[in-house]
Image (cartoon, rainbow, N blue to C red; front, side):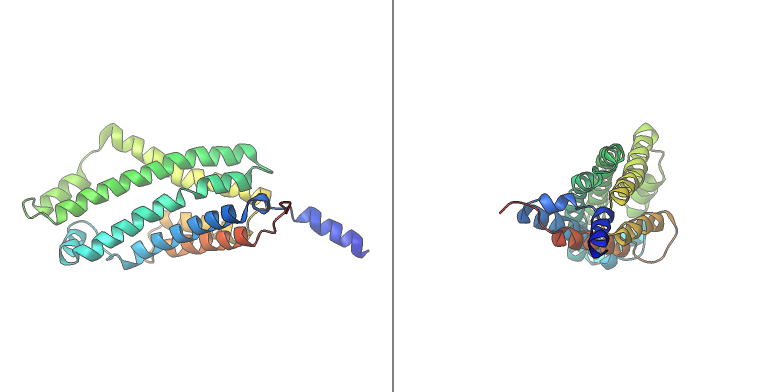
Length: 225
């Protein structure tokens, strides 16, 4: 009976593809996910809760702090980009089509995220330049009709960052290669970003990514020694 139970457990718990990675690969993937999430969280938690002219005035009052916050956000995004191939590799065993669709859409989403960072750099530079009226800049920058470029950006961002990563999570869920609690947290992170919440949503995202990172590190190696 005990042998039968052990065999059923092996069937119920498929071996993670991460078990076949080198220790360096597992460590690198875990570091990218965890550090990326933590840098995102640090950038949002330390940033003033405001927008428009209020934020620009805060940048003027705290230029170094604001610069470090933006840099943390940029580097965090670069590291989280590595989550796309990690999720692809972990999601392929049971749902290769979903995994590939999520990874491809995710590339567009992360590209849109990088475009947002470019806009943030412009706003940061303008905030520190007294020659440009901040109220006028904010009115034009945030109130103008972006036309076709803005429409394409919105499709890339919501279709990639939200739909793309959601597809990747479904693929990983079906493959059972990451703790399902971490996947639920990531879905909660996506939902929180679509709702008018008052708390930093990246806290949820960072918790999900760190949980995933820990699971990757703990994946029992199946490589020949």
